[in-house]
Image (tube, rainbow, N blue to C red):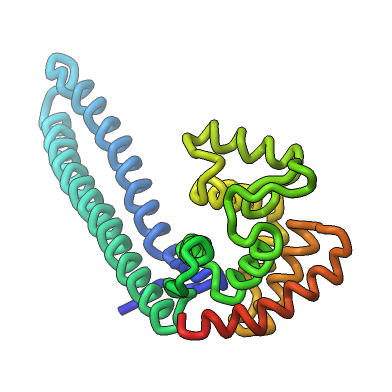
Amino acid sequence: MIVGIIEVNTMNEYKVSDYGIFTNAISTAKNLNTKLDEGKTSVSQCKNVIGNDSVFMGPAADSCRDALNSSSTKLEGLTTNFTTIASFLEQTSSTYQAGDQAAAQNVLNIGGSAGTANTNNPNRDQIYNYLSAKGYNKAAIIGILANIRAESSYNTDALGDGGTSYGICQWHNSRWDQLKSYCSQNGKDSTTMEGQLDFLMYELENKYPQLNQTLKSVSNDPSGAYQAAYEWTVKFERPASMEAGGAKRGNYAQSELWNEYASV
């Protein structure tokens, strides 16, 4: 039984929603407990007052004391019951959400993912597998790879532009400085593939969110690979003759690279 609604987005992530019925019920139970606690306090205060039998005496006072004792017992029982109900609802909600998440993951597995690459090009495959683990589909990854190939041939030590650009994405001048700063602050080595890929993701998520959203939404086919490559060229790399360069890299992505990763 699945109570929530599974939403699977183009980043191959899932989101389980529509658990408001549980949230509302849990909140109501807890609010009632708060009110019951307030009632118990009021009853206790009344018991303390009417317990002074030197002031309150006779059958009517005794009847009030009995009623207050009975009310106190009933309120205690209600509090215990609503505490049990809230706990049960929280456990049930957690169980259903876990089930929906498992179901969502099965949907993802059925639909396929970018997979794991092993094409005898270690640096390229490392980039592919890193981006696959981040949830990008094959077309998006291939589009990025087409650009990295053009920029550095997947070489982390690549230098360009007269020694002012560095790494797999040829980070230029201040962006190279930012690469080194980011890695230093996060315990990474800016000369390694891991450090450079982590910085790539940092830039993509924080400085190029629109491009990131485009990559999340490209169709997982050769035309999507072309789109990813073109958009990455004109928005992330921005080389000279961006449009022509984007078209060239897009064509490489949708033909040669797509075919090389056909079995992934």
